[in-house]
Image: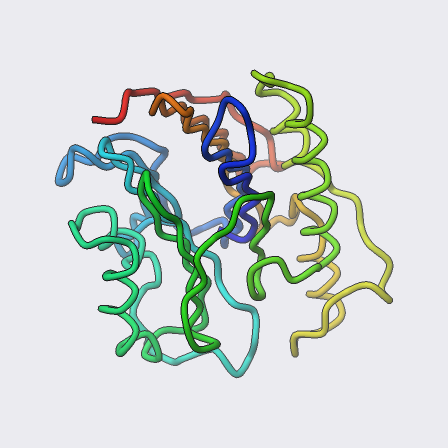
Length: 256
C-alpha cells in the first residue's frame, strides 16, 4: 500500500473505516481479495511474486496493512519481502503488541516500512525507521510513505475528504470513497516532500491516485468494521491498459 486513510472508533456505526490505495509496479503479479486456500480465515489480496500481502483481515477480526517508507537510506539490498509482515500477523495468534515486540529485533533487516496491526480491542502503528510503537487513538488518521499522520499533501487532502464523507452520515455510500481514492490532483512543487528521489518522481508519486504506465495505483480498497462486528470489504482493481478501472468486488462476514 502507498496510502491508508482510516477512521478509528470515531463514528457511531463503525469502529474502523479504511480507504486505501495500493501502488506498485504494474508488471508485479498479484491476486484480488479472496479467502486464502492455505489460510482460510484470511481475506486479503496476495502478492504472487513473494507470497505476502499489503492489507487484509481475518474472520476473528485481526487486521494488518503496510506501506513502504520512502527514503533512500531505508532501502536494504536483498531484504525480505515486507508483505510477509502482514501475512505473518494475519496467520498468527499473537496480540498486536506482542507481535510487534516479536518482529522488532529483525525489523532492521527490511527496507523501510510502516505497519498497522490490530484486532477488535486495539490498533498499533510501528515503523522500522524510528523506535517504539504507537497505540492508535480515536480519530481520523493517514499513513503514506512517511510516519503516521505526517502531513504530506495527499494525506492532508485524503483525511479531510474522509472526514467529510463520514461526518453526519451513519451509513455512507461506497462511491464517494472510490472517488476520493481516484483523485489525481497535483500539488504545487513547493508542497512536495523531499525524500531523496528526483523531483520528477516526487511529482509522479504526489497524487492520491498515481496514473503512470509502469508504476501506479494497482488496486483500491475500502473496509468497514461495524460496532456489531460486521465486516464489509470492497476492492477495485486498476487495469494496466490506460489505468482502466475494473469492477468493484465485495466480501462480507460476521466476526467470529
